[in-house]
Image (cartoon, rainbow, N blue to C red; front, side):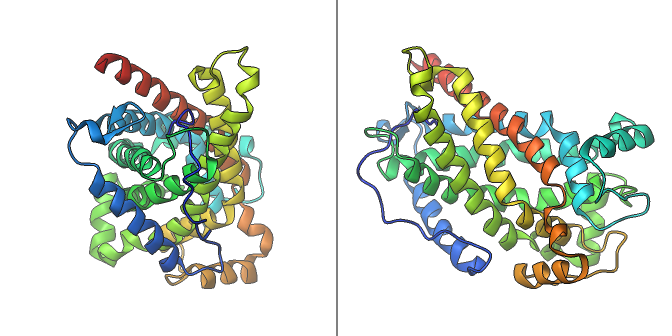
Length: 343
């Protein structure tokens, strides 16, 4: 997703931005059809006609896989605290009204640093493939819409990012369920395989995709904001690069990535909280929400107040600012390395 990839005047019709009031299925169907077309167009690595921003589809996958692994592994402890702040109170967990640093200190004191890495194995195993397809589909989508032809076009970058997230979430949703169930305080599961086995035996495979529609409704606007802000920020930061091409400076990539990740994370926090509640449903709590976004939102507001929708905001932003910066920096650096190695 190189913000250095330049857009053109060949702008497609403006996408319909999904919101809480929109149908999750209509939002996901639009992005699904787009991502399917882009995947179909990305075939042979050897074909010169399938080069996006100087790399083949497969090489973009390699760069994206490295970026995704770095993003999740580096900031995993903060993500664990965020999950605990958003989930219903479990035994020993009263984090809804404490600060991020208090929550972190309490967790380390009780469980040690190791306790904040529960479930990280599942994330590392899944983040690589998921981000590989995510970045590769993004580049193919942007190329198909003319986003690399002339100048920056943040709107094309945003639409391409929304299309790519459909593929990413299809891979990551089951992994995220396992991760969050292992992250809660006093998790009843012994490890990744035990968690998968118990969830499958108790609730079936559907439980791994219960929050998929909610995840899409959250991540499609998240990616629209993220990619659009990233490309736009790189364009605005150009004059600050001392006459150099801003797209080639790691500092600009890191700053733009952090800004994009933090803003997108903050705006979509209520949807992230709903996702957490659905994915940890039944773990030390008898509360059942059903499967749909809006009824779950209404239930949370009715029983806990509107402020509950913003639980974990600080932790979520703190996670996404550095992780997005690391992700973009790793991705752009890997792209440069692979471009140079293939030349």
